[in-house]
Amino acid sequence: MYQNVKNRATLSVAALCILLFCLAFFPARHGWAQAAKPAAKKPEVKKETPAEASKKLVEKAREQVAKGQNDKAASLLSKALELNDKNEEAWIMLGNAYIRAKKVSNGVATFEQSVKKLPASPTLWFNYGYALGQAGLHKDSLKCFDAVIKIDPASAKAYKYKGYALIKLFRFKEAADTLEAALKLTPEDYRAMLFLGIASVEMGDGEKGRQIIDQALARNPALKGEIPEKVKTYLGI
Image 1: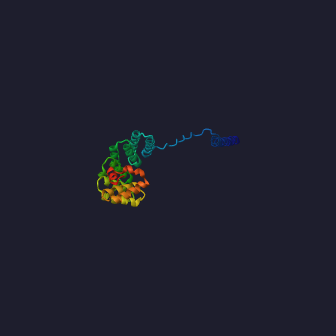
Image 2: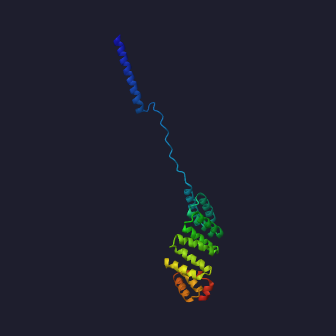
Image 3: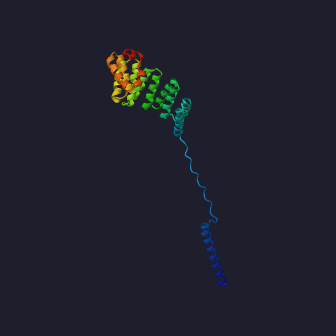
């Protein structure tokens, strides 16, 4: 009897071992009674930043400018600046879109606002000065060109258009000095050369003015249309 009990115990232990082996081996190998796997995480969709969205609107605006649709471009650029008012390119394009659309006062206002947002940008200061000149506000434009020169002393175009503004203000000696500075930086700038010739004539040095103007026109005859009638009459051209 004792032997029977012992045999039964041995069988029970063996059966238990087999059961444990099955539970441990088969589920892992054949997928039986496996615990549910956690659902795979969906890849995160990167959210577009305001700066990125602003840049995309600028690209769309560029397409409208190429089609001559300045009003549509201006609308897109205004939205771009609502998203990112530090977008220098958007400011430049918006101001110039207004000027091309003959809305010069809007262009001036845009560039005035732009330099408040980005006061260290020589490009925005230059465009602001140019827009003021387009509006006939030459005295106001001087501060803009001075701001460009302060930030970038090698900006020949700032000297050139400051010189032009001084001519418009009848400050011919200052204009000549400023234009000579421009030509030291870019000797082949024939428009600056033309402006210097005009300033020289207006100062009473007709011979020097004629030589400079002739030199400019020899290289770019199209500049003749930019000579004031008074100077043309004086020089007989």
